[in-house]
Image (cartoon, rainbow, N blue to C red; front, side, top):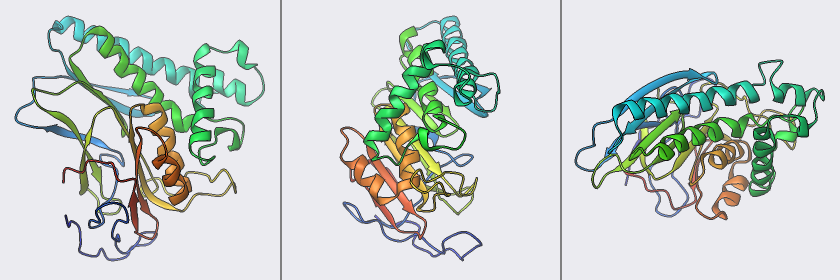
Amino acid sequence: MQRDTGPEPAAPGRPAAVGARAAVGARAAVGARAAVGASAAVGAVGARAAPAVTHTEDVMGTVVSFTVVAGDLPAAAVRAAVADACRVLHRADEVFSTWKPDSPVSRLRRGEAALSALPPEVAEVLALSERARSDSRGWFDPWAMPGGVDPTGLVKGWAVERAAGVLRAAGAAAALVNGGGDLAAFGSPGPGLRWRVGIQHPWRSGALAAIVAVRAAIATSASYERGAHLLDPRTGRPATRAASATVLGPSLALADALATALAVGGDDALAAIGALDGYEGYLIRADGGEADTGGIEFLS
Protein backbone atom coordinates (compact mmCIF):
# COMPACT_ATOMS: atom_id res chain seq x y z
CA MET A 1 0.00 0.00 0.00
CA GLN A 2 1.32 3.46 -0.91
CA ARG A 3 0.43 6.64 0.99
CA ASP A 4 1.92 10.08 1.52
CA THR A 5 4.41 9.62 -1.26
CA GLY A 6 4.70 13.31 -2.11
CA PRO A 7 7.70 15.05 -0.55
CA GLU A 8 7.16 17.73 2.05
CA PRO A 9 9.22 20.92 1.65
CA ALA A 10 11.82 21.12 4.38
CA ALA A 11 11.08 23.37 7.35
CA PRO A 12 13.43 24.33 10.18
CA GLY A 13 13.94 21.33 12.40
CA ARG A 14 11.87 19.00 10.18
CA PRO A 15 12.87 16.33 7.66
CA ALA A 16 11.99 17.00 4.03
CA ALA A 17 10.06 13.74 3.60
CA VAL A 18 9.53 10.35 5.16
CA GLY A 19 11.24 7.37 3.60
CA ALA A 20 9.99 3.83 2.95
CA ARG A 21 9.38 1.56 5.91
CA ALA A 22 11.90 -1.19 6.39
CA ALA A 23 9.86 -3.92 8.08
CA VAL A 24 7.61 -6.66 6.71
CA GLY A 25 5.72 -5.28 3.71
CA ALA A 26 7.24 -1.93 2.76
CA ARG A 27 4.77 0.95 2.49
CA ALA A 28 5.09 4.62 1.86
CA ALA A 29 6.20 6.58 4.86
CA VAL A 30 3.48 7.59 7.23
CA GLY A 31 3.83 9.23 10.58
CA ALA A 32 2.64 9.06 14.09
CA ARG A 33 0.51 10.65 16.72
CA ALA A 34 -2.80 12.37 16.33
CA ALA A 35 -4.84 15.01 18.19
CA VAL A 36 -2.58 17.39 20.03
CA GLY A 37 0.45 15.35 19.12
CA ALA A 38 -1.04 12.08 20.24
CA SER A 39 -2.81 8.96 19.11
CA ALA A 40 -6.54 9.60 18.99
CA ALA A 41 -9.60 7.42 18.60
CA VAL A 42 -11.16 7.99 15.20
CA GLY A 43 -13.99 5.49 15.34
CA ALA A 44 -14.80 1.82 15.16
CA VAL A 45 -13.97 -0.73 12.49
CA GLY A 46 -17.14 -2.34 11.15
CA ALA A 47 -20.76 -1.53 10.43
CA ARG A 48 -22.18 0.60 13.25
CA ALA A 49 -21.00 1.40 16.75
CA ALA A 50 -23.28 1.07 19.76
CA PRO A 51 -24.44 4.24 21.55
CA ALA A 52 -21.73 5.49 23.89
CA VAL A 53 -21.44 7.74 26.93
CA THR A 54 -18.66 10.32 26.62
CA HIS A 55 -16.85 12.49 29.15
CA THR A 56 -13.72 14.66 29.27
CA GLU A 57 -11.63 15.42 32.34
CA ASP A 58 -8.80 17.93 32.81
CA VAL A 59 -6.15 16.11 34.84
CA MET A 60 -2.44 15.30 34.81
CA GLY A 61 -1.70 18.30 32.62
CA THR A 62 -3.85 17.01 29.76
CA VAL A 63 -7.43 16.24 28.77
CA VAL A 64 -8.56 12.65 29.32
CA SER A 65 -11.54 11.59 27.21
CA PHE A 66 -13.84 8.65 27.93
CA THR A 67 -15.96 6.74 25.43
CA VAL A 68 -18.01 4.11 27.26
CA VAL A 69 -20.35 1.52 25.77
CA ALA A 70 -22.71 0.73 28.63
CA GLY A 71 -24.14 -2.59 27.49
CA ASP A 72 -26.56 -3.64 30.21
CA LEU A 73 -25.15 -1.14 32.72
CA PRO A 74 -27.70 1.54 33.71
CA ALA A 75 -26.85 5.13 32.78
CA ALA A 76 -26.51 6.16 36.43
CA ALA A 77 -24.03 3.33 37.01
CA VAL A 78 -22.00 4.39 33.96
CA ARG A 79 -21.80 7.96 35.26
CA ALA A 80 -20.74 6.70 38.69
CA ALA A 81 -18.07 4.47 37.14
CA VAL A 82 -16.69 7.37 35.08
CA ALA A 83 -16.57 9.52 38.22
CA ASP A 84 -14.67 6.75 40.02
CA ALA A 85 -12.28 6.46 37.09
CA CYS A 86 -11.65 10.21 37.20
CA ARG A 87 -10.84 9.95 40.92
CA VAL A 88 -8.19 7.36 40.03
CA LEU A 89 -6.61 9.85 37.61
CA HIS A 90 -6.64 12.71 40.11
CA ARG A 91 -5.15 10.44 42.76
CA ALA A 92 -2.32 9.55 40.37
CA ASP A 93 -1.71 13.25 39.74
CA GLU A 94 -1.52 13.98 43.46
CA VAL A 95 0.92 11.13 44.09
CA PHE A 96 3.19 11.34 41.04
CA SER A 97 3.27 14.95 39.86
CA THR A 98 6.82 16.29 39.77
CA TRP A 99 5.34 19.81 39.47
CA LYS A 100 3.76 19.62 42.92
CA PRO A 101 6.51 20.08 45.52
CA ASP A 102 4.59 18.23 48.22
CA SER A 103 3.69 15.17 46.14
CA PRO A 104 5.10 11.85 47.39
CA VAL A 105 7.26 11.49 44.26
CA SER A 106 8.67 15.01 44.67
CA ARG A 107 9.55 14.20 48.27
CA LEU A 108 11.19 10.94 47.15
CA ARG A 109 13.20 12.77 44.50
CA ARG A 110 14.53 15.19 47.11
CA GLY A 111 15.42 12.35 49.47
CA GLU A 112 12.92 13.54 52.08
CA ALA A 113 10.98 10.28 52.32
CA ALA A 114 11.79 6.58 52.15
CA LEU A 115 9.90 4.46 49.64
CA SER A 116 8.38 2.44 52.47
CA ALA A 117 6.81 5.60 53.90
CA LEU A 118 5.08 6.56 50.66
CA PRO A 119 1.74 5.38 49.19
CA PRO A 120 1.97 1.81 47.85
CA GLU A 121 1.32 3.03 44.30
CA VAL A 122 4.82 4.52 44.22
CA ALA A 123 6.48 1.14 44.81
CA GLU A 124 4.17 -0.43 42.20
CA VAL A 125 5.09 2.14 39.55
CA LEU A 126 8.80 1.91 40.31
CA ALA A 127 8.64 -1.89 40.00
CA LEU A 128 7.00 -1.48 36.59
CA SER A 129 9.68 1.06 35.71
CA GLU A 130 12.39 -1.46 36.56
CA ARG A 131 10.73 -3.96 34.24
CA ALA A 132 10.48 -1.36 31.48
CA ARG A 133 14.13 -0.44 31.92
CA SER A 134 15.11 -4.08 31.50
CA ASP A 135 12.73 -4.74 28.60
CA SER A 136 13.93 -1.65 26.71
CA ARG A 137 17.64 -2.40 27.12
CA GLY A 138 17.93 0.63 29.37
CA TRP A 139 16.51 3.19 26.94
CA PHE A 140 13.74 3.90 29.44
CA ASP A 141 15.47 4.73 32.72
CA PRO A 142 13.71 6.94 35.30
CA TRP A 143 16.75 6.68 37.58
CA ALA A 144 18.95 8.46 35.02
CA MET A 145 16.89 11.65 35.05
CA PRO A 146 18.19 14.92 36.55
CA GLY A 147 16.88 15.66 40.04
CA GLY A 148 16.14 12.08 41.03
CA VAL A 149 13.95 9.21 39.90
CA ASP A 150 11.20 10.38 37.55
CA PRO A 151 8.69 7.75 36.32
CA THR A 152 6.70 10.34 34.32
CA GLY A 153 7.23 8.36 31.10
CA LEU A 154 5.18 5.48 32.50
CA VAL A 155 2.77 7.07 35.00
CA LYS A 156 0.19 8.53 32.61
CA GLY A 157 -0.23 5.23 30.81
CA TRP A 158 -0.44 3.43 34.16
CA ALA A 159 -3.11 5.83 35.42
CA VAL A 160 -5.20 5.68 32.23
CA GLU A 161 -5.00 1.89 32.28
CA ARG A 162 -6.24 1.86 35.88
CA ALA A 163 -9.08 4.23 34.97
CA ALA A 164 -10.16 1.89 32.17
CA GLY A 165 -9.98 -0.98 34.66
CA VAL A 166 -12.51 0.80 36.88
CA LEU A 167 -14.96 0.93 33.97
CA ARG A 168 -14.41 -2.74 33.17
CA ALA A 169 -14.90 -3.76 36.81
CA ALA A 170 -18.13 -1.74 36.97
CA GLY A 171 -19.56 -3.84 34.14
CA ALA A 172 -19.25 -1.57 31.10
CA ALA A 173 -19.40 -3.56 27.87
CA ALA A 174 -16.54 -1.62 26.27
CA ALA A 175 -14.59 1.59 26.66
CA LEU A 176 -11.78 3.63 25.25
CA VAL A 177 -9.94 6.07 27.52
CA ASN A 178 -7.60 8.56 25.83
CA GLY A 179 -5.14 10.33 28.10
CA GLY A 180 -3.51 12.87 25.82
CA GLY A 181 -2.57 10.21 23.29
CA ASP A 182 -2.06 7.25 25.62
CA LEU A 183 -5.11 5.04 24.98
CA ALA A 184 -6.50 2.06 26.86
CA ALA A 185 -9.37 0.08 25.34
CA PHE A 186 -11.42 -3.01 26.06
CA GLY A 187 -14.46 -4.72 24.61
CA SER A 188 -16.06 -3.95 21.28
CA PRO A 189 -17.63 -0.63 20.28
CA GLY A 190 -20.41 -2.58 18.56
CA PRO A 191 -21.24 -6.00 17.10
CA GLY A 192 -18.35 -7.15 14.94
CA LEU A 193 -16.45 -3.89 15.47
CA ARG A 194 -12.97 -3.02 16.74
CA TRP A 195 -11.51 0.17 18.12
CA ARG A 196 -9.38 2.09 15.64
CA VAL A 197 -6.91 4.87 16.33
CA GLY A 198 -5.49 7.53 14.05
CA ILE A 199 -1.81 8.40 14.04
CA GLN A 200 -0.85 11.92 13.05
CA HIS A 201 1.72 12.70 10.41
CA PRO A 202 4.75 14.05 12.26
CA TRP A 203 5.10 17.22 10.21
CA ARG A 204 1.85 17.68 8.30
CA SER A 205 -0.40 19.49 10.72
CA GLY A 206 -3.88 18.03 10.94
CA ALA A 207 -3.13 15.08 8.65
CA LEU A 208 -3.60 11.47 9.70
CA ALA A 209 -0.72 9.32 8.57
CA ALA A 210 -2.27 5.97 9.44
CA ILE A 211 -5.15 4.26 11.19
CA VAL A 212 -4.46 1.16 13.25
CA ALA A 213 -6.63 -1.41 15.01
CA VAL A 214 -6.21 -1.37 18.79
CA ARG A 215 -7.19 -4.21 21.08
CA ALA A 216 -5.86 -3.00 24.42
CA ALA A 217 -3.34 -0.14 24.45
CA ILE A 218 -1.42 2.28 22.26
CA ALA A 219 1.02 5.03 23.24
CA THR A 220 3.08 7.47 21.20
CA SER A 221 6.03 9.69 22.02
CA ALA A 222 7.07 12.42 19.59
CA SER A 223 9.33 15.44 19.35
CA TYR A 224 7.58 17.48 16.67
CA GLU A 225 5.31 19.46 19.01
CA ARG A 226 7.38 19.81 22.19
CA GLY A 227 10.80 19.69 20.59
CA ALA A 228 13.56 17.41 21.86
CA HIS A 229 12.16 17.10 25.40
CA LEU A 230 13.29 13.51 26.08
CA LEU A 231 16.74 12.84 27.51
CA ASP A 232 18.99 10.00 26.42
CA PRO A 233 19.77 8.14 29.68
CA ARG A 234 23.18 7.11 28.33
CA THR A 235 24.38 10.63 27.54
CA GLY A 236 22.11 12.97 29.49
CA ARG A 237 21.55 14.94 26.28
CA PRO A 238 18.29 15.47 24.35
CA ALA A 239 17.31 12.43 22.28
CA THR A 240 17.35 13.00 18.52
CA ARG A 241 16.88 9.55 16.95
CA ALA A 242 13.12 9.70 16.35
CA ALA A 243 10.48 12.06 15.01
CA SER A 244 7.80 9.79 16.42
CA ALA A 245 7.50 6.45 18.16
CA THR A 246 4.38 4.33 18.73
CA VAL A 247 3.95 1.14 20.77
CA LEU A 248 0.92 -1.15 20.99
CA GLY A 249 0.44 -3.94 23.52
CA PRO A 250 -1.65 -5.44 26.30
CA SER A 251 -0.58 -2.98 29.02
CA LEU A 252 -0.72 0.79 28.55
CA ALA A 253 1.70 1.38 31.42
CA LEU A 254 4.41 -0.63 29.68
CA ALA A 255 3.44 0.63 26.21
CA ASP A 256 3.84 4.21 27.46
CA ALA A 257 7.31 3.50 28.85
CA LEU A 258 8.35 1.58 25.74
CA ALA A 259 7.17 4.41 23.47
CA THR A 260 9.42 6.74 25.46
CA ALA A 261 12.26 4.24 25.06
CA LEU A 262 11.63 3.96 21.32
CA ALA A 263 11.68 7.73 20.91
CA VAL A 264 15.01 7.84 22.72
CA GLY A 265 16.73 4.66 21.53
CA GLY A 266 15.50 4.41 17.95
CA ASP A 267 16.32 1.19 16.17
CA ASP A 268 17.99 -0.51 19.11
CA ALA A 269 14.90 0.08 21.26
CA LEU A 270 12.70 -1.14 18.38
CA ALA A 271 14.64 -4.41 18.32
CA ALA A 272 14.11 -4.75 22.07
CA ILE A 273 10.36 -4.21 21.65
CA GLY A 274 10.25 -6.75 18.84
CA ALA A 275 11.58 -9.37 21.24
CA LEU A 276 8.75 -8.83 23.73
CA ASP A 277 5.64 -10.98 23.77
CA GLY A 278 2.55 -9.06 22.67
CA TYR A 279 4.17 -5.67 21.99
CA GLU A 280 4.68 -3.96 18.64
CA GLY A 281 6.60 -0.80 17.79
CA TYR A 282 6.53 1.68 14.94
CA LEU A 283 9.39 4.16 14.50
CA ILE A 284 9.69 7.28 12.36
CA ARG A 285 13.37 8.21 12.46
CA ALA A 286 14.57 11.79 12.62
CA ASP A 287 15.82 11.50 9.02
CA GLY A 288 12.40 10.33 7.82
CA GLY A 289 13.16 6.61 7.54
CA GLU A 290 10.68 4.13 8.98
CA ALA A 291 10.72 0.74 10.63
CA ASP A 292 8.28 -1.39 12.60
CA THR A 293 8.18 -4.77 14.29
CA GLY A 294 5.86 -6.27 11.67
CA GLY A 295 2.76 -7.06 13.74
CA ILE A 296 0.78 -3.81 13.67
CA GLU A 297 -2.54 -3.98 11.81
CA PHE A 298 -2.61 -0.86 9.62
CA LEU A 299 -6.15 -0.16 8.41
CA SER A 300 -5.25 2.69 6.05
